[in-house]
Length: 241
DNA sequence: AGCACA
Image 1 (cartoon, chains in turn yellow, green):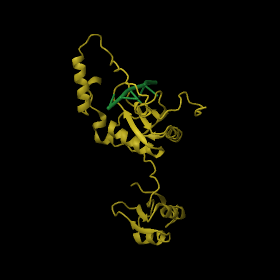
Image 2 (cartoon, chains in turn purple, brown):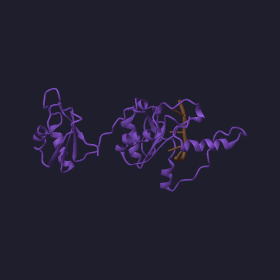
Image 3 (cartoon, protein in one colour):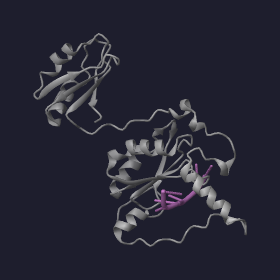
Image 4 (cartoon, chains in turn red, purple):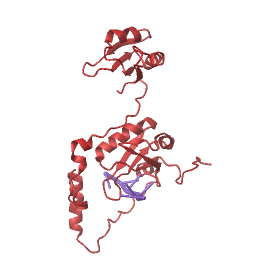
């Protein structure tokens, strides 16, 4: 028997279908943040999202392995993404890029875009071209300016996926009086210690580098939650590369 | 709410 998928209406698929996505997010930013969120579950072959009326607020993330898609659904269901909980299912049909790898791809006939009975398709083609070239294009759905063009609206928090294990640690919640020397005393106890880096303009954080990821991991385990002062247990994660 | 293959 193939994979079980109890409690889901849709059979297992390499691709996840996400909806309830904040529609204010621009497509390129959306794809980037989806990649940041989902690449932790496995290799992503493609991310698709569209801004047409029928398809806004939705995206497809195509994984190389179906098991990645399954884990992504389990772990990220209802995850607050740009301030809205994402709803995730398996996609209903196989993605073209997967079918091409399978050798089962058959080019489908061009979807007829709502054939406005005998109306000029010249105008339609011009609209399609405009959408491709001009990110501010909005003609099909009224003349309102795009909210996403306004900087403060576009700046929505992108939830970060945890960085994969590596030789550099990221330390947070340090008391502001912490010095590199103090951190060195703590972290140099662990083998493979190389250096501490702090950024003056960003108090409370530091980077600590080890020779390799096994050694940084030992230090993380040893010092996780360590209190330089009682009110600041340090939080240690792997640094983003 | 809305399942595509720009």
